[in-house]
Amino acid sequence: MMRGGQTFSSADFPQEAAQADLPQGTLLTLCSHPSIYDVRVDLRTVQGEIAVSYTISARWPEGIPGNTWISFPWLSALALPEAEERFPSAPTSKRCGDSSMQLKGFCFPPYCLERRDGTGLGVYFPVAAANLTWDVCKNAELGRITNRKMLENHRLKLRLAQTPAMVADLRLWPLTRGWQECFTRFRGEVRRDVDFSQYRRQDLAWIRDCALVHFTYAFGKEFMDASSGRPDLQRLLEQGAEFGGYDALILWHEYPRLGVDGRTQWDLFEDYPGGLPYLRELIAQAQAKGVRVVIPFKPWDRSPEENDRQTTHRIADLMRQLDADGIFFDTMNTVPAPFRRAIDERRPGVVFMVESEPCEQRAIESITCSWNQYHTEPSMPEANLLRFLFPEQTRFGIARWHTGKLKDMAIERAVFNGEGIVIWQDVFGCWMPYSESQRRKILQWKKLLGEYRAVLQTPDAIPLIRTEQEYLYANLFRQGDRAIVTLYNDAQTPAEGPLICAQGYRTVQSLRGAEGLSVSNGVVCGKLSPGIAAVLLLSI
Image 1: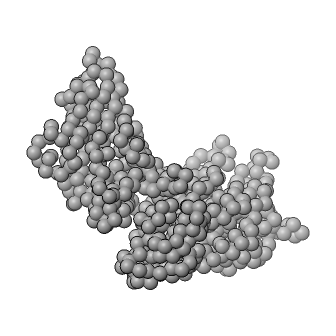
Image 2: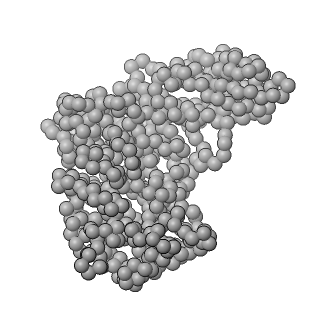
Image 3: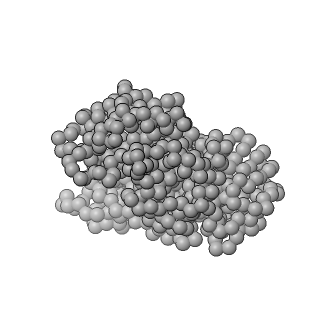
């Protein structure tokens, strides 16, 4: 039992707790209005980890509850000599101070202490997969720590009742291979209960061969021949050859007609010049040229009388009638389960692609393709956490409103993450083309994506590995006796000399952006200019 404002230290634990080798120091601090707490701390050693959980209840005077704050001072006491710290919401930081990791709210990387020899410690804060209900557990708040000041001063608000509740559940991992081992264990924890059966389907595997997707306005000047009033598919694909060739088209059929009258997306499909039979023929022509066609679904464009069951059958029937290859779920980050069942009954092989990243782990099970989209001014480097947790999910980078150098940065961002690109130039009637040099960059990147697809799609990918210079960032994609490293120099001057550790690899080749590369004593040396995502190929 504890009264408000007291602390609980390792000396208060029985002998078996002390044998867990936790660092000495205060294990928790509670502060609130006067109350009496019942605190239980469980320590378990399972499969090479130490699990620490806190269960607390409160007895409030006169039964009137108040707020309680909890902190775990031992977390900041974990510091190891000569160890680099990686914080959950900022494993590394950009030159501007922001996190270099694009995070997801349903999971956070571990807090990691890493020495150069690989020894260290990871602290993982598991978060419920779906976040379906309000929970007193504060693991997610601990996962939002971005720097040492936050770690030392964390103070988490609790709403305690007389019924005991678990308020924190942490896992400690001793490390021998540093951050790479820590992230691999973290990825295993996140993926533990995920059903990957959709990713094993051969009829859905075609999306993994796609590097470039074109956002095609059905009435835009890229696609429509104004003189004939009919699409010119051949011209569109010939223009796409400058980028390396489109692998898929998202055929956006509604604009600019939507809103002129009461017609919905279903009506506008049927009212397309030539109707559904012509659209089916157009899709078949694209497929004959090796280009897949994705049809959009807009959840916000339905008549008030249309219920969810009717919507499900309408889109499923449409896919059968058009024989299309995929559905683009506009504005969505999850897909109702009936969609998959209904569409499989009518047209197997239809890939689900969403505009927003899947919002939680269960959505990832049915959505095998998503956009890595951002609207604000990008700030590189930025490793997308979802890309490395679920590398089998196909992803396409896009920044629709960016022009000039911002478009260049968007290309570098896609290269750094090892992902494809959405080519969108006619943005709601605003013509925002890529420059000739940008088209050459994308063409080169598409070739690399095709040639090294197996390496870049490896399940053993690690973001933000250790580098040998400040403001130099790297992602590692390993497969067998080869590895690809994407590097980004965030400094204002060229990075020269030692770049990354390459223990076990004997040769290095620059596929993009780096100069003068060599491997010596397990270290890759070379030169990399600022603002460029280089691509290195390592071989044993």
